[in-house]
Structure formats: C-alpha cells, structure tokens
Image (cartoon, rainbow, N blue to C red; front, side):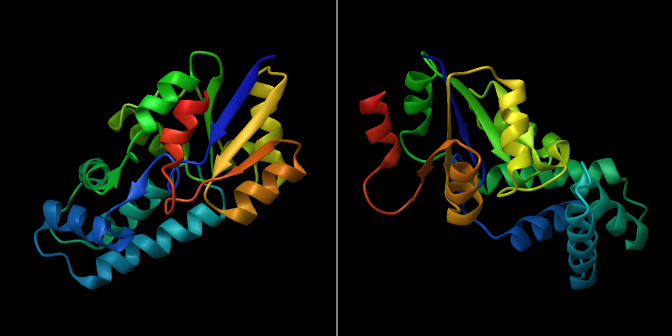
Length: 202
C-alpha cells in the first residue's frame, strides 16, 4: 500500500518564535530604518485583502503597498528579501521532526497542504531543509481548507492508496481532512513529543 502524508506548514512542520507583526516590523526596519506603524498597517491590510482573494503572491502585494508609501524608494524585491530572512529567523522546526520525516519518507510520499501561498511555502521549506516532495496551496485549488478542493487537488497530484493529513488546526485540518476522505492526525505542540513518537512508529 502506498501512502501520501501531507502536513500543514505553519503550526505543524514549523512553529513560530515571534509574531507576524514583529517579523514584518523587523523586515521594514532592516530595509527602511525605523519604520512607522503606518507602514506595518499598510502591509497587513494589503496582504489580507489579497490573501482573502486567493492571490498567489499576497506578500508581494503587501510590500507593494509599503513601497508605495515609504520614503527612499525601496524596491518591492528588497522588502520581500528582508521579509523572507526575518520570517526564516522567526520559525523553527520542532525537535525530532527532521528525523521523523526522514524515516517516514523512506516509505511514504511527503507533502505540504497549506492555505499559504506557493512561493512563500517553497521558501520556508528550503530555508528549513524539509524533505517535502509535493506542495499544494489554497490559491492553486481555488479554496482554502477545510474546503475539499485543496484535498482533491492533492489527490490529483499524488497517486496513493491512502492519504493522511497532519495539522494543528482542528477545523481546517482535522475536520477538513476527514470530510475529504483523508486520515486526519491532529498535531499538538504541547504534551508528548509527536515527532519522536512518529519516528518510533514509522
């Protein structure tokens, strides 16, 4: 039997050590000096609007709004580069996850199923050396989890006998996966080390 195991990204494969607001402020301060609060607000307003519309690059839209208002004519690419670096610094891979993924990947196809955008997801996977083979995003599917569309797209992309979704959000990941015919596994950072247990069982 072939198994495809998909993971949520943020909150499961990666956990946050700093808030999103702090990450954006760090990136803007790095690029612009002491960035005013209005620029942080401009980023999040533009990002949220485009993310809600399933724009494939909402981070770029956010930094385009910043570039339009900031002094000094910063480029969108420079702002995005600083944001990627700050984001990488504010994320960590849970203890034991790399070993568990390496073991699991010997027999199963490993994927990410995320409501985030593709470019950002690929950056995060590369920055943290995660052995992921397939990425499926909400923007590509035309809907966010728990809608069945992302799960159906994952099935279209990966042929397997069984599909599993590991995620931290109960409604989006567990209930969405169950309704779509995936085996759901609820990830909780607190309590026994999930990744060490998974490594022992794989």
